[in-house]
Amino acid sequence: MSIPYDHAPDRASLVALQQGEVAALNRLIERWQRPLHHFAYRYVQNGADADDLVAEAFVRLYQQRLRLRTDTKVSAWLFTTLSNLCHNHHRWKRRHPTVALERPTNSSATDSDRPLTAYDPCSEQPSPDMAMEHDETLATVRAAIDRLPHDLKVTLILHHYDHLSYREISEITGCSERGIETRLYRARQQLKEMLAGLLAESTRR
Image (cartoon, rainbow, N blue to C red; front, side):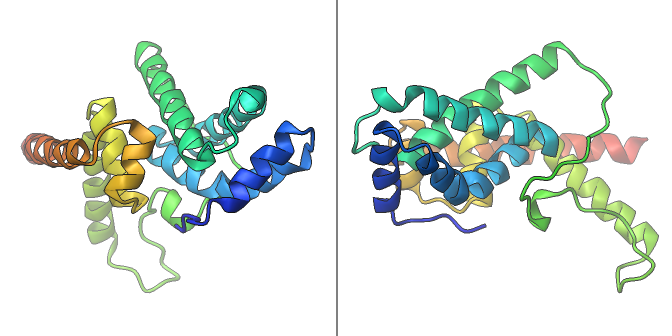
């Protein structure tokens, strides 16, 4: 996934949006929809839910446009808003567990956004047994990440999946760069412990 690093267009679009140019919102959506969806999908692990949450983040940007300073870093504002939306959604899902199939989505998700599928006999893939083992490992990793506390989960996703620097993550989370380093260390340690436990459970089945 590519993150735009030139923020001048975002500031220009924000000013235009504040002045009533609705098309400016479309420019911001075009620049940030895919990176935001990538993050949301990693967090909620459902493409349709990620679509809804990203759309809500842009709705809130529009609603709050007149309250934002013209030098606001729009990308950080969007990621912060989206991470909070994902957190609230995740908490709601845990309180209301359901068995739901992921509905089709027309989002701009890349292959890296989607769950890896198992064996395809028409492609040069590993054997079905190897593919199944690989999928089970990925599912175990996703389950472990899903159990992380919100602040550690956000930091891990932004750094390892979205490849943001400590400084950029600091701007999104409001945590110092040294704090980001600490969060990443704690996230890795907790993942290591959880994965050991989850893999041990799977071998006993």
